[in-house]
Image 1 (cartoon, rainbow over the protein chains, first blue to last red):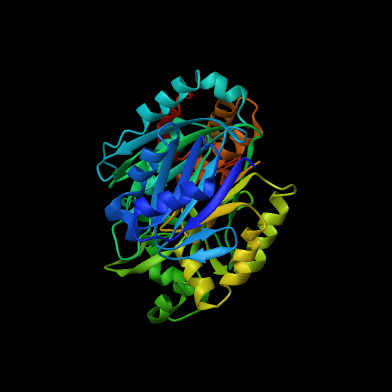
Image 2: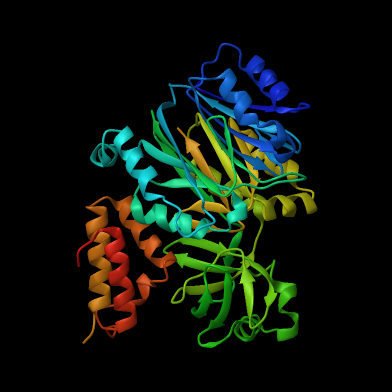
Length: 367
Length: 66
């Protein structure tokens, strides 16, 4: 077995890692990915992991709630241990000060190229290299981070933003705990990978809308088609403007690129505009969406992409979606879908693939 | 004049992807997420100066010479 997924609940990080190590037995990981409930943050699970696995590359994030195989947990840590049979090599980099305009994503990517013997070497084995990206969410700068990563490199980075429950949001890399930072792990896989991006949403109206006034940094949209955003949103839905907030959850916005939908969810009505959970640049064409059946759509996406038993699956599932399956009492059905694989996941404060996304599940499948 | 925007988009995708279909698709998506509605522009589309300036800036960031 080249990938193991283990869930642990303990009183602190040291005890949790000790139990994880015991469950691993003689398995020798090359790379450990973990999602730890924020209740463990004070005892830094990354430090305990690095002390126990000094030769292993380690990244992680705090979480609101965790998935492991067919389980859904809170106050737990989900660990994924991957050995050299699945991941040949790993390069971990940290981008700090992501709450400033000067966050440097260029140097870590250049250093990653150098680590793997140059970009041409990566390009010649493009189907083997994939990145995992974990944003510390309090910076609220994921769209800039993903834009900078996507501009700088063609390596595909998939991941999500840290979340928390009764604690502080953090990301972790090799023993250290970080605020206002982004952790990037670039993997050279042995048998390749697949990326799945699934969202339970479809286009509500074919009417194309162009964002004409927007504050991307503060994630506020003011105008669509040179008219107030609330007016146009209400018009497309056929409702009174005073009721738009009632439709924010069921009818988010989507940016369409070929057959892919990139969801942008609403936050709240603000002065002269609506704040979102992802900034949208002016000029972007958007559609109004309607939310669908999360179980059906997730199953279809997984079954279409995964034809053979994978080594491991990592699910970055939006916290909104976790809350939806919890409220609808369909957690068990959802977890059964991922229980078919060796898998971990967590409830994210935003998802990452080509850009920053909302209300989506981004899934990394390691073949 | 017309069609310049589509030609610029095609050049960026071609230069970035160098024939790799996955990179080509991802580059088009990255342009869309940067606010360039790639499917909207044809060889008949007017040469909008603001859009051309934006695409020129993006091309420079991508390291593509137009």
